[in-house]
Image (cartoon, rainbow, N blue to C red; front, side, top):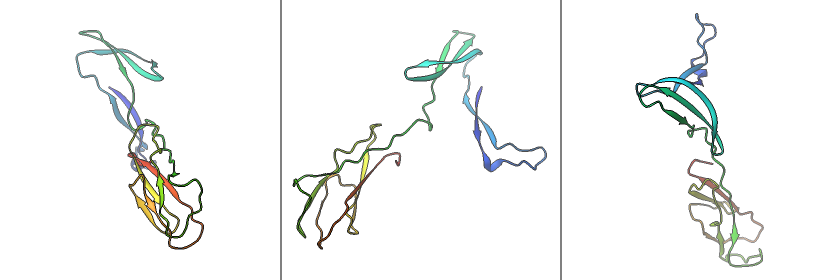
Amino acid sequence: EIYNLIENKDRECRHCTPPVPGYKNETFYQNEDDQSMIDMFFGPYKNTQALYIIGRGPGKTVRRIRYTGEGERNRSPNANLQITDKDGVVFSVKEEIRLDGRRSDDPDGDSIEYFWDFGDGTTLVGDSRPEHSYREKGEYLITLTVKDAKGL
């Protein structure tokens, strides 16, 4: 077996006898056949590194292990807000403003959710192409926030 050392501060007790470390072993790889591990090393794999394990026994195998779990980087999506029906940014009171957030994207290809704040206390969730009008004259800051399925 190969173990990964994981931080576990809730379990740590330095004044106990014997002291309990703030780490635990978590199985990273477990051999599931009759082979014995005779060597392992890190080597190149695509644009990253992988752990290669050479086994001795029936079949004499070389296995490549690449970590793709929680540590994989999730990049934030990009919000792109457009006003679709007018070249200028001056609108009349009660005039419908058509907005478009469909050019927003996620660099990881995840689906995104739209969160609109129209600056007048009104918010909207989910619509990529909302319409909004203002009841009073003034300057309003429209904010579009997008989040991906992983919460960024």
